[in-house]
Image (cartoon, rainbow, N blue to C red; front, side, top):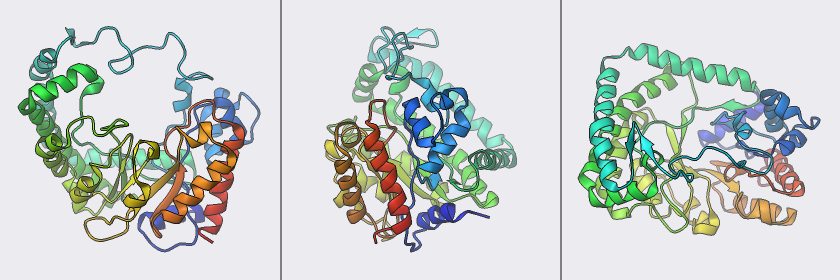
Length: 377
């Protein structure tokens, strides 16, 4: 039996008319703010993170959680990532070494893909083909039900993300990976193809789990493919070597009528119509200051002619850290006025970094409570 709050989220995913506007999760990274939003003494989150985080979401009027990450804020300190934190391929590593191979030039990326990544993907594809699909489906259902039980009945837990072809900058670093992308497009397409071959098999099980387990048919696909200027790779090259394999990878989910939306970081305007053509039905995480045209996107339709599902976030890079409470309220009003009438959630545009003034967070959650209760009224 779903709570009224969880049912509001369920109905909105299905684009059924409701008065209230449901609230997507917020993820403050500053521990003291989690304690304050939870209405608990200082130090509560650090001492007992999961119940404190859950209380914070409940007090913030949260209706739906896709990514259940209650211990995520523990990965940083009170002022962000602390000195001495481990550096990776995209976070300042002086040398990138993968499986004992140093990645110092684009040809190193090519060599490692051919010697390691492609054979690993081929083995994974074969293993997936002969695996017990019933066991995979049961595992997905069990994980979702366990997460729902931990979150509690007042908030709807929905599945998060699905496999699809991704850039490998997290393995090789931006410079050498994208140099290899530009110099060796055939090899990059082979990487996308193999990822899609595997993802299509895995997504067949995910789609079945949603049907068999009665799970909400929703997914938020999450992979950063743009910066503040535009896509990380030329859009014409993506049309040639990425989009066809992406579309193929998610086809089992489309066949099961799953509503998929895309998490937007940076300026993704060039990808928006293409993602809709592939069958996606909405977006989340707009960086308005980078050129994401919220009004234009919200006026679009999916490829079946329906309103989009939009998770409209107050900006965590501009308004929340640098604005005033009035700015927060004004932005929320704008998002509601121009959002879809029957497919709108409110939230933060991404995780909320340390340093956001309490008054702005308070204005945010007060606005959540108002719009969840009153809708556009």
